[in-house]
Length: 215
Image (cartoon, rainbow, N blue to C red; front, side, top):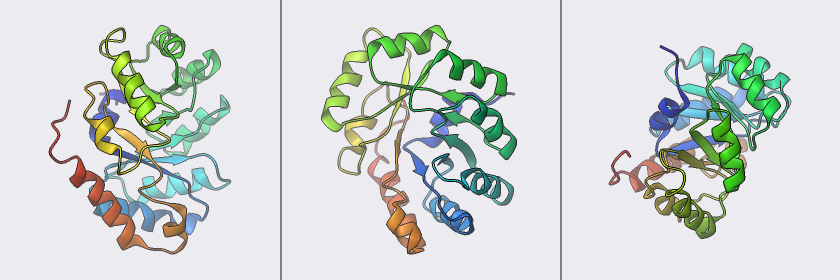
C-alpha cells in the first residue's frame, strides 16, 4: 500500500524535525539521537550540498525511520530526492510545476501554503495535507482557527516559528496534524555533537504533547 502524506504526519506527531545537515558524518548520530527521544519521522532539508548523501545514509542505516526531503524548490529535486531514498517531499510553497514533479516522482508531497488562495490552489491539485509556512506564533494560530470553517478536512503542519513555548497552542487545534521545527536539533548542538541534549529536546517535545489525543 502506498504511503500517504496523512499517514506520514500522523506518525510524525507531535513534531517533525527539520534538519539542516552540513556534515554527512554526523547524520547517523543525529538521526539516532532523535530516534532515542521518540522521533520516528525526519525531514532533511536540501539546503546544503551533501543533504541527499545524508538522507541516503540515514535511510540505509536506520530503516525504522521515515525520512523525507524538504525545501524542494526545483522540479528536478523530486526525482533526485526519490533516488536518494526519500519517502516523502516537502516544499515551502506550491506551484503547478512542483505539483506535477511531485506527481511524477510518486512521493507523498507536503506543499507549503500561507494564504486562503494558496490553500485553494493546493486543493485544486488534490492535496489535503499542507504545510503552513511560515508559522508566526499567535498570528498563525488565529489563522489556523479561521481556516477550520471553510477548509473542512484539511490538515496542516505549521513550520517556521514553532517553539516549545507555543507548541501546544498549535497542537491543540483540530486541523493541526503535527508541527515542524528546527529547534529540536539546532545547528549549534549538532556541531557540538551534543546528542544527549538533542535526545532530551525530542523527549521534551513528546512529553509536552503527551496529554493530547491524536486528532
